[in-house]
Length: 534
Image (cartoon, rainbow, N blue to C red; front, side, top):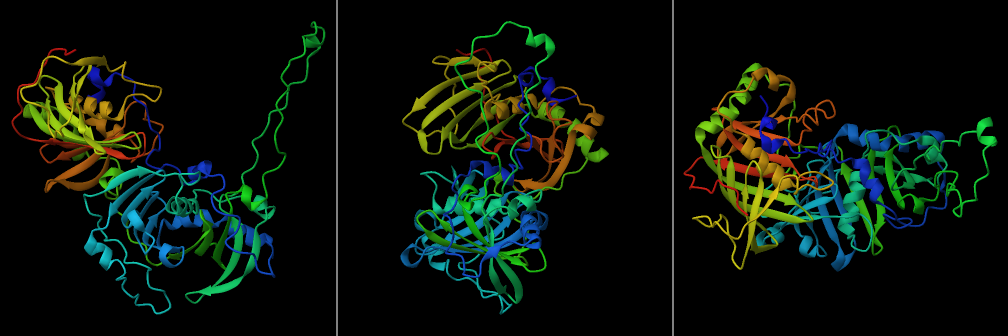
């Protein structure tokens, strides 16, 4: 009835709860000194926040999250070092989609998508670089033109390079710190106004942006949090009082390092200047100093808020999770039977597990024999190839060097293999990303039909899509370890199923917060080794 019935799926499955919603606030846990102390010296009339201003600042982040999306226009640096950015951020998806340009953009010039912790960059071609400054003038004369042309509504499918990013530390770039600030200005809950009022936050002055009156507030990059509650030690009992005395310990009892939350802005990620509506907690602009003392200005276009579609590596187009209909549940119920009838498929894999590797490759899957055979390589060194033979029992593998391979050698070799059981290949976090993807693919076939009622509770409809021009329905099926813990749209595995019930793509969330894909196309499958290798 479920894909996990097969032996390959009986190994431990790690429920990556809410990996898709890698908390916007979780970036705050990564920051120390995020930005410099202040974008510039506060004006002479600066004063502490009033209670109403502290409350407005406290509600700013949750207001951004509830608004979901906004346009972003940013610049930092001057002259030959200036970088210009235009695009959009979707705080609910935790996704930014931008074009990066300007004389100081360097190798960052081009298109960019980011989720907290991972950046995908598509370097600009010579023609794109020449056209980047052709930003259309807005129809509203009160609005400034974007500093560079906005990215295309539909992101290109290829040419992207993935990397991790960190907001602070020696490796942090101005772009990384800018991205962290963009994500940090949204949160699922309001900040604590009473704690903000006790910080060095200040009212700096008033201004107007696009005809809207705003207050300019100097506040923290990371909102203050209450100190964790320390449980009092239990009072010694009468029985304990008559016990023999113990030798004194050489280690002193731990004591809290501070008795109140920090108030200095440099202890709260640094100072950021916020332009907030005078009558609502709506952010219009913010400024800060990036690493290298580069002045950053970010304008938010609250009217420019289109749907932002993610790259395949970040989950693809927008989903609308819901309970499957009876017809959709019946389609899922015949998926494994339909795959078994197909016999096998040619497979193509993409597993972006940055920073460890960004794997690509291909091969074949034989559902009748319950084995696969494929070659994979890291895009950063394509001539180092791993040849894999997954089966129900585990993984056989060998390495090849000196030549890129998109598919493994035919006929398959029968010597030189090393074998590991699935249990041997797990670590403290569970199975490896590519192992879970291949194991699930092998398990996606059975000679009989599953029970449709099972999918009514465990599966979710996500969206309609296409694979190679053919219409498919994208579903997720929650594993037993995930059921009751995650919401719809958050399961680790996704299944792209065509109208006949055939699985056309399998998708998995990786440990790094990206999505891995395994595409399955009908075609002749060569004879694959079925016995244990190695």
